[in-house]
Image (tube, rainbow, N blue to C red; front, side, top):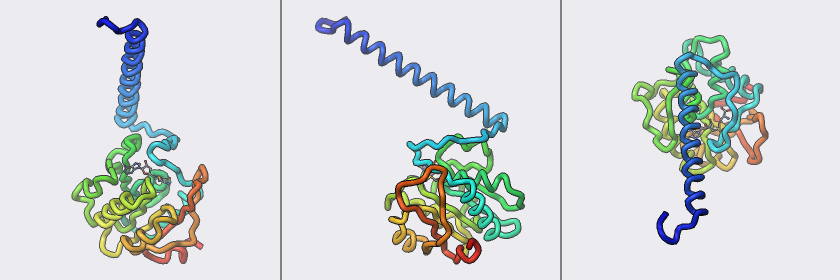
Amino acid sequence: MSSGESDDDSLQLSAQTMGALLEFYKEQEERADKLRQIEEGDIPEFFEENWNMSQFWYSEETAKSLAEECLRAAGNHGSIACVSSPTLYRMLKKMDHNCSIKLLEYDTRFAVFKDDFILYDFKDPLGIPRELFENFDVIVADPPYLSEDCFTKTAATVKYLMKPNAKIIVCTGSVMEELAGRLLGVTKCRFKIEHVNSLSNPFLCYANYNLDHYKS
Ligand SMILES: C[S@@+](CC[C@H](N)C(=O)[O-])C[C@H]1O[C@@H](n2cnc3c(N)ncnc32)[C@H](O)[C@@H]1O
């Protein structure tokens, strides 16, 4: 112990070190668990919402209704990109169809979906595989944050992914309406988006085509 340092200080230090060590082992264990799940193709029934990642899952009914619309709009052997919308992806995965589907997500728990999972961070909007350029008939995006920066970057990803004339569906807060219209040519729909846990902000669905014609 150096002069001036009390017994209490050294105890405090070792408690902190112990805490950091435990945290490190916990993370290692979680990582090993994730890897095991991926290797074994063990897909959890339920993914808990992580509010630190701004995760608010759609209700079963909303996910089903959106998935049906995606399949209708994509057509036979179409392609659908679920951008930051894992509940929609999981619903599509359960349904009977011949479309190809990809999930672009930041939460690595969804890597259990193997080749369908594309690790994606909205902060790096074009940091996605080149083969996905202009590849999709339908893109659904539900950006994690209600900020201009997050929406603008997500919109750049959507444009990168879309085939010419692709259908775009965006689920986001009503404060994003003007920006969404300007960047992606989407307008407000009557179709209601509901969540398992209700949100405090008004939340809407936007599309670049008349989605309500098919959903009401
Ligand atoms: C508002 S939630 C939308 C989820 C959607 N309602 C659903 O049920 O599938 C936002 C999504 O963005 C994802 N996310 C969080 N941080 C992100 C990041 N940096 N880049 C891309 N996506 C992110 C979250 O994991 C979450 O799936």
